[in-house]
Image (cartoon, rainbow, N blue to C red; front, side, top):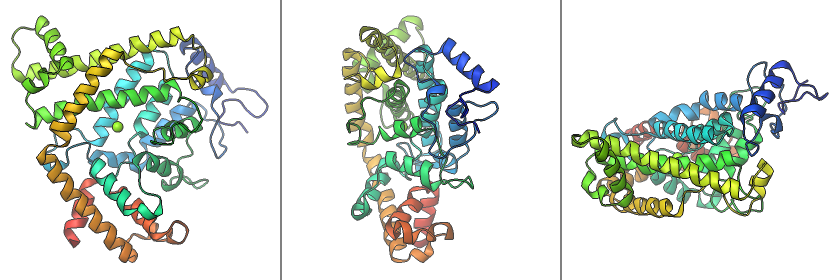
Amino acid sequence: MRSDKGRGVNGNLNDFDSMTVQRESLWLAPYAMHSVDTAGREHKESSHAYRAPYQRDRDRIVHSSAYRRLAHKTQVFTGEKGDYHRTRLTHTLEVSSVARTIGRVLRLNEDLIESLALMHDIGHPPFGHAGEEILNECCANCGGFNHNRQAVRIVTVLEERYPEFPGLNLSKEILSGQGSRIKGEKSSGRGQALLEVQIVDAADSIAYDTHDADDALELGLLNLDELLELPLWGDAARRVQSEYSALDPQQLRRAVVRQVIDILVTDLVDTTTARLKAANIQSPAAVVGHDQQLVMPSSEVFQRKTQLEKFLFQHVYRHPAVLAERSLAGEALREMFQRFSEHPEGLPEGFRRHFEQRGVARVVCDFLSGMTDRCALEEASLRG
Ligand code: MG
């Protein structure tokens, strides 16, 4: 049997594995995570005839039901505000797109990056962070709720797609990468995350900073002039206007959003490249053992980005219209948690059979957090 570590038990590689090793050794940087060095999967599997390990991980995530449901989950704005703005799924695809761009220029493992990006928000409950806060309160006596931890739970326990094992049996680098996103569990002596993981974190923040601002403009919660007072947006607008003199407001807005992404990505690539060189990083082990994170923006851009985030927090995430929606959604979730905890017989059979082993509260939480916004609102209004 060949293990998914790339090499067979007798140390030989099949033709495709050899090709992957060759291709990666030609293309990937020495500090990138090479497929052949994977720590493998919890449950041993044969290697695939023509798909590399992280490529298989990516496919398993894309075919999971938790991934599909991201299409109908809130990023910041629920479906009540129409359906032209970002959802959790389109956010995920933007993160993947930005992360792969950065990963390719730094010659990192794009399959690993894509897998990490596509699963990074898979554990979000309905109604975004508002839903997360409510479920965390409801589960205070049984370990709480955190969307990053739930993502790991989904891919190791809750997805039931294979007769041989629970979950998706993903490569260990994906699980530890997602695990490193859980706040408070980061500095447990495991060192820094791989560069591929650090890139996805950085791309997540570039994507939401820019697209939340873009959506807020589209929805009329902000106007462009307010944003242009921030140096990051002001500079981007000046660059656009030096190239195009007569753009209408909508064209200007879109061009500025593109420019802001470009500024953030270029700065991150340049700064990270310089840091890798200065620290003479030559292997993934050196990345993990380094005393600091290597993927960073410059201090000037970091400052400007922080300023933008503070602005968005005040003007968008705490906008009365967003807060009102959040509180309604939160109440719906809290009411459902109470109702199903008191009447767990109302849960589908696939969940009821886990009561004994997992406890009713945890099973109710798994059920509710897996719901889409629409499903949760329907369920709440049917019985509320
Ligand atoms: Mg995200």
